[in-house]
Amino acid sequence: MPTISEKILHQAMEIAWRDGFSKGVDGRDEMPKWSDLDPREVKDKVDPEYASQLPFNPEKCCARKFVDGYGVQCTFSHLDGGVFCTRHQTKFDGLPEGLDVPFGRYNAERPTHDISKPEAERLKPHAWADTKPERSKRASPSAGGKMGVKRPGCTAKSMRDELTAMGVSIDGLKGKNLTVRYNEIMDENSSESDEVEQTVEQVVEQTVGETVEQTVEQVVEQVVEQIVEQVVEQTVEQTVEQTVEEKVEEEKVEEEKVEEEKVEEEDDGMGTGLKPEYPLTISGFKKLFSELDIPIEGLKGKPAYMNRYDEYLEEKKDDGEETEDMSDDDLEEDTSNYSDIDHDGVEYLEDEDSGKIYNLNHQHVGAWNEDCSEIIWANDAARIDHESKSE
Image 1 (cartoon, rainbow, N blue to C red):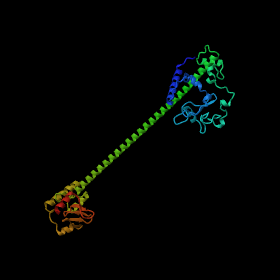
Image 2: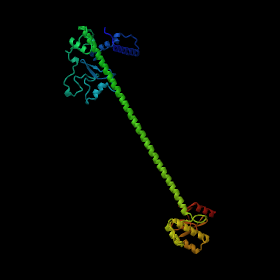
Image 3: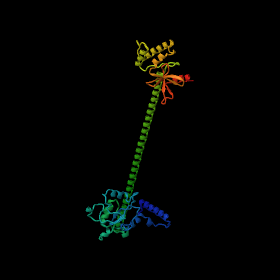
Image 4: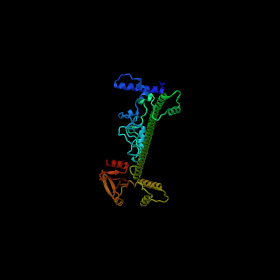
């Protein structure tokens, strides 16, 4: 009896484990035989002719394979969400629309020709065993493979040459022993080839899966970075816009405040300790000085005109002219464009052209509101002066 290799032992252990697991699920408790666990025996039991008669297994790839003239179902598991294994799926994806894998699908009618090609190119039919009666069956354990039956086309010389090329000693091997040894080596190589193919397929699936996972992670990172950049950019823009708006609003308020102060200074009049009302321009000063007969020689700039006007008013005040009652003739002359009004018992003059209201000293104090029921005072001084006089 040939020596059991470590590889055969590992395969037997896996078969034993799977056998125990399935029996535990089914509730069975019988002890398996060694012939049920020996991978060499297990492999030889399922020959192509027998495998071609097995029912369709939905857990496996649906592609039909050509093995020694028989159509058997592919033993690899199908991809998640698909019906083919990785190898057959790759073949199928490379075919034009309307074509299928060469030997068809195990759960469909067996084709007579290669259906992966267009009909015009399907010249050679598939050599199915049941369509060629003269074809010799492949040597298998069920046909006496372990009893020394030669494989088709194998001679003693060809078996010796092939074993020698594979590094297998043929010393003392003759006749039946040579055939048995040759069949054992071929079966082992066939099993190793299937395992290598399945391992390669698993590695490819794992590599593809890892590549896809890495690609997804990279895409997610890029999307997150773009979102963060966009949010930061929008936040900065909003902050800048808000800051600019606040600055503009502050400047507007400051300008309004300065304008109010300027109006108050310009509208302040004489009397009750108030400043006089100055013309806004030098032209206004010249016109006023011309009416008041104030000399303008040597005056340069508005400040000089203001100082000169202050001196004039001070001289008038010292002369007592400011508090002197005006005669009816003077009033008529000075108020030719004004109307006398009485508001809360206090007398004022209303400019008939502009609608502005002045006190009797011709100081601007305000203007009527929309319904002319109240005076909108030009400044607090004018309002306080009115309140003191109306009490």
